[in-house]
Amino acid sequence: MIDYQKDIDYINLKHEFDNFYVQKLLPILRSHEKVRLRYLTAFAILVGFALLFYPAIIKKLLESEIGSSDDLMCGIYLGLSCIVIMMLIGPIYMYKKRVKPQIMPDFANFFGSFYYQYEGTIPDPYLMSSDLFDDYNQNIGDDFFSGTYEDVRITIAEEKLRFAKVDMNNHEMKKKVFSGICILFEMNKPFKGRTVVLEDHGLFNAFHKVKGLQNVKLEDSLFEKYFEVYSDSQIESRYLLTTGFMERMIKLRDLYDGKSIQFCFRNNTLLLAIPTKQDMFEANSFFRSNINKNKVDIVFEQFYTIFSIVKLLKLNQRIGM
Image (tube, rainbow, N blue to C red; front, side, top):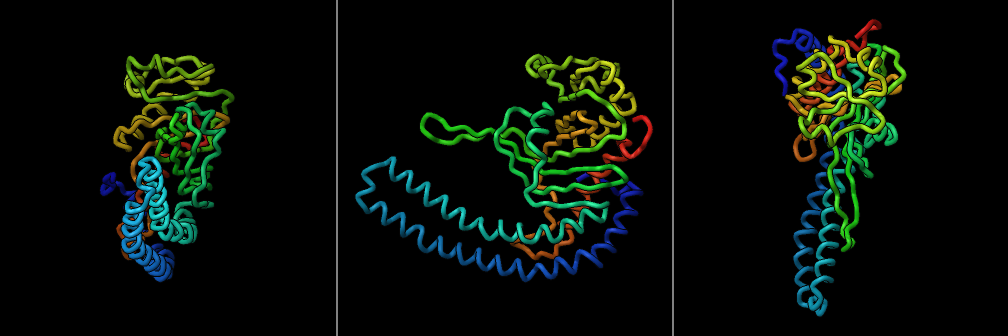
């Protein structure tokens, strides 16, 4: 996590949040603890069932005449394994689906006014037209927030984008395209065109051209080192990517430890794509006590980091960026 110990704004807001946690969030978490224990009991029963019957079924299959067909046996093993895995995942999934919509709206509304949806996603047409991602045909959503912070309309979505295809042996193959958070901001600076800013790939930039857009060269050498800019308007791209904005975007990149942040200006919005391996916004536990202040503090910091982008990029100001 980022060290915010010298950030006065963070320290003051964290103090307010700790009071909010005691008064608002803690009673909700306590009420969900009994729910967690019920689902955990169901999980334990299913584990016992799997340990007892799964080996016996496999042994029976090995002793049967079906064993003469290796391909058929592999298919049966795979099918049974999938059934067992789905059975074990079931209680965990159902617990999250039931509990998260009851706590995450309150969590997000500490910062602003937000709507929450479990497994929500930003519409595919918008993501695909941003040119920030390779081709994909599967969009798996997790936590989804949409609302207002500091008078700025924001949508935050955990997205897992994959490209799935079936090979000649009828086996499905999946390629990970993107895993992380997508943040959509409504801009206060009007524009008509499209500007796409991708991670700089050095000599390989020739293979990352964006169809229909021109390559834009900017005067900021450090920004040019990290990013490659494409736009349908050289003038508008410079209108959007001011010296101050580029400096702040470099700081944002550093804030996320140099991760390959990419972004797109389109339809008066700014879409940020930030890859991360971390499972975001997990304030609830399944295998441990639901009342876990450490997990809550981690989620608070995740929200703070995201919302700090508004101030860092000065998106809440009605003047130039």
